[in-house]
Length: 234
Image 1 (spheres, rainbow, N blue to C red):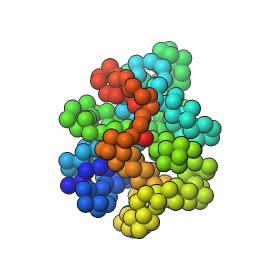
Image 2: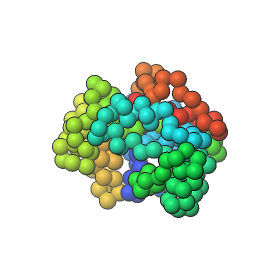
Image 3: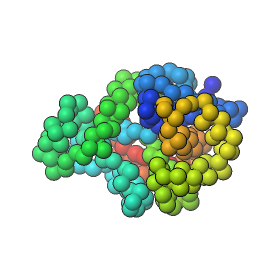
Image 4: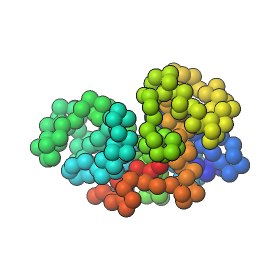
């Protein structure tokens, strides 16, 4: 039984790296959050790169604190999620207009691109209160910042230099062999290198949450109108 897992969105859906009580690392690619949670079985902690709790208006405090910690240019990797009432909007134009009327903010192309993934997890977690107790929001760049002695990555994750610095940090924690063996099980068409590293650093955070040594933004997380926490763990 896997005890902790790190999850990142990928071209094929969702990519998870898991660690069981014996230290064995597993991995899986599935299409939906529901399938992923079924594949992970009775995982104690699942750290996933997706916004979970959502405001009724205005930005989330956790995102603001994450951007401040990361600084430019890494801060731009923290996309503002939608306010809850706009989660089911049909088009970006519709969502952007409605949000501007509520709090004056528009919705950019990148932010709109994560709407479907947020909706998937929102439906999954709101439909299963027991599962929601085991799923925690993590942001890869924030996790790497923490893993790197609270210093942001020097290079973007799509650059060769960025992949190298992230791999070096993860190899220190999990070993190069674990990274290479996991890489060999999945094609780059379904799991890109940055997806692999993002899932592994989320796994690092999941392990810290399980060990009760993780930290979070903000320190005292609020909950949204449906009871989901608005927090980023690292």
